[in-house]
Length: 404
Ligand code: SAH
Ligand code: TYD
Image (cartoon, rainbow, N blue to C red; front, side, top):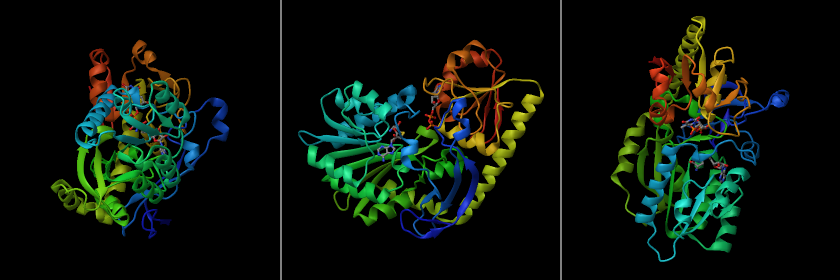
């Protein structure tokens, strides 16, 4: 049983993925013996609709000076955040000397677009290595976890914000009440909060269970967030589906009564009726179990045929797939990744070697298992030569299949 982090009701898990290591816990062989594991179980709170982990490791174990995720590794995401920043600048920064705060600003991928034209800005980023990268590029950043106390400190030192932005971070923070109280204090009365996160409905529809891992303590929906913001006299005034991270939702939130509510919000609330029913989550569990059986069967068959398989992209998401499905280095010999901090290390739990991308290019495998499926378009364009050389892709979202 768990207790809902939003409304305090009790709820039971609908799926148990078993013992899991930290999704970004890439490690050296010397660290294997001391590797940390926790139980990855997920539940749906029938009272407020929030889907969430039962247990989450302590945030300081996940976000620190050796954090492995650098936002700028994807060129498509760089464009996405440039467009996000442009949209904020043209629609929401109307005061004469606006102030923009970003929560979870990572390597400065979004705030750099405000910094370079002299807009007052501040990033809040607890992982020191990625924060330093942003600072080096002229992005003002505080290295800390955002919460109510930090929000008060920011207001004292900088004044209130016109816009607070956040991408792929709100769903990481267990203490959402402290976060929303902080946002309420930090935001001007007519200010705007805009954030995006992987969208629950996409995860359910695509069986993208790999969005479930330690960092993602919540899978948000418009309904569950409406419940949360309502407590603080705030409301979702707009929603915009995004293709990023396999299907995300961008939420625009304001203090109650300040802005008109878009029809899209009501339309999504209606479409989400099925997300408020527990059978949806029972079906999802069955779909995950089927996906696991089919993926292992496909990989075993390829190996029985004497062919080589290399993983493509040592994503955080892959940690759930690899450990839940029981993928071993005998099945997938290595994973290619462009992030220097991951290269030469082993994947969490299963200990598959992570190798530099150049090795993939130099010695194509017969099959590439696409762990970075959310970047499929960018990768397919880049890997045309692999396909021409006879290489095949194994994909598992939304269903398991081999593509020539
Ligand atoms: N916004 C970026 C990074 C997302 S990864 C993008 O979309 O690509 C999540 C980031 O949030 C990490 O850099 C992590 O260190 C940071 N983070 C985690 N908890 C946080 C908190 N309480 N406050 C601010 N940032 C946090
Ligand atoms: P991503 O799917 O963005 O996020 P998460 O870790 O949250 O699941 O991770 C992309 C990973 O894939 C990152 O480690 C970089 C790697 N990658 C490549 O190796 N090649 C590529 O072409 C792309 C787009 C990503």
